[in-house]
Amino acid sequence: MIDFRAYFAGALFVTGVLVGSVVGGTPPVHAADQIPSNNAEIQLSFAPLVKKVAPAVVNVYASRTVERRQRISPFFDDPFFRRFFGDRAFGEPRTQRRVQSSLGSGVIISGQGIIITNNHVIENADEVRVALADRREFDAEIVLKDERTDLAVLKIDAPDEDFPHVSFANSDELEVGDLVLAIGNPFGVGQTVTQGIVSAVARTQVGVSDYQFFIQTDAAINPGNSGGALIDVRGNLVGINTAIFSRSGGSNGIGFAIPANMVKVVASAAGDGDYVRRPWIGASLQPVSSDIAMGLGLDRPRGVLVTRIFPDSPAEQAGLEVGDLIVAVGENEINDPNSFGYRLATREIGSSATLRVLRGQEEVALTIALQEAPETVPRDMRQIGGRSPFAGATVMNLSPAVAEELRVRDEYEGVIISQVENGSAAQYVGLRRGDIVVAVNGVEIESAQFLQRVSRERPRRWLIEIQRDGKLRRLSVRG
Image 1: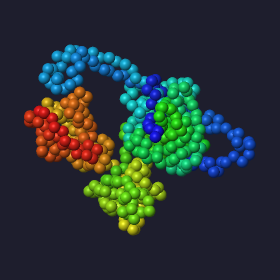
Image 2: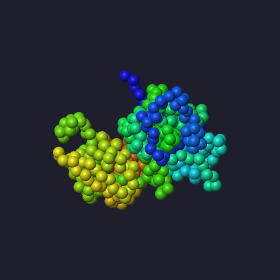
Image 3: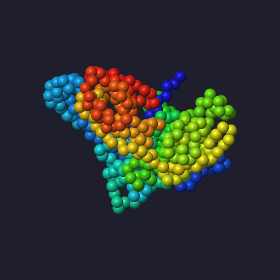
Image 4: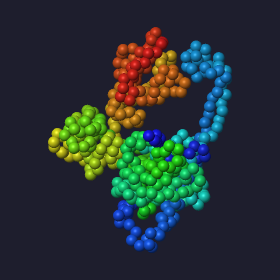
């Protein structure tokens, strides 16, 4: 059996270049409408299309300076040794600096120099520079980074320029078999164009971002293509090339692109602030297996099953019930929680969506309001100090808003760890970002303030209960 591994399509972490493109507007021309009927049509070329789009695809150089502190003793990173002997016992640290660079692709989507690329190309960058197809170079500002979609928005620092750019297509109108072109900078060799077809339009098990809903293509995509453009035969952007399946790291004809409709959401958010606002309905969903489908009397697995409703949420207000089977959002069929999340995320906050729901043997239509996740209790962020196992952890009260920020699913109450310092006692005992602290020494933790007070105690042994990825874990630590 071949063991395929998922790779980001453009993470060449050698010298930073970022290329990509965005396109839009009219629906794609389908292959069925364009079958060649004579020898002249067979000799048609994509050259005019490439000449139109290529100037909007740019190389982006992203670099960051990394500092590493070194000491003579191998024990200086152990918080328990440092507690008893102090920092001076291990000698003065020596700082080494080096520059890391990454290579990718990007796409200009407006004449003002707004660029879309992948977040993993420019993540943690101190400096970003873009090179246009005509070899001009400009500094670029990072306007927005969105880990959840693996997209980022850049702005070229040149207010008097009118840059070539491309428009967005409606990616929902893309069909399997449509011709597409991929444009980017694979392996740093320079701008490259490859051609293929759409192999699938809703791949949901790729595993490279929170929103698992990708266009699959056989157009050759390689390292360096990340952030590059996937365009239709009208020169409109249908997706941003992001990942590949490969054994070697090179193209095996299985590439994935983020649909243009999701890209538009992130691009629009950059004009409103520094984060993406997403709809929250307040319901937990479960995929439908063959056994569940049989129990529900379905001829095949489809839809998503509602397993929990958060009080006073949009789901409750819309009349959604536990046990309902959501089979469609508007006209778009739903087959798993990933496709449901994508369909909601590409709709605007403040609007509404129609859910088609199977309730028993009856299909009903429910209208649900799309709103941001609320902060139902103040987050009350606190950094734990002292000599407890929580020292070095930042904690806060959990709410739907905090759960969205920390990418925690279906948990909206309790106390959550939002950050753990490197080399801290909290890291040493195995605490992580996203852990929910359930109890300490048999006492239920109800708030961040209470956890901070409990952490000042000096028991001989700490018994800590946390919830991680939906599972309860118990830690025992000597005091």
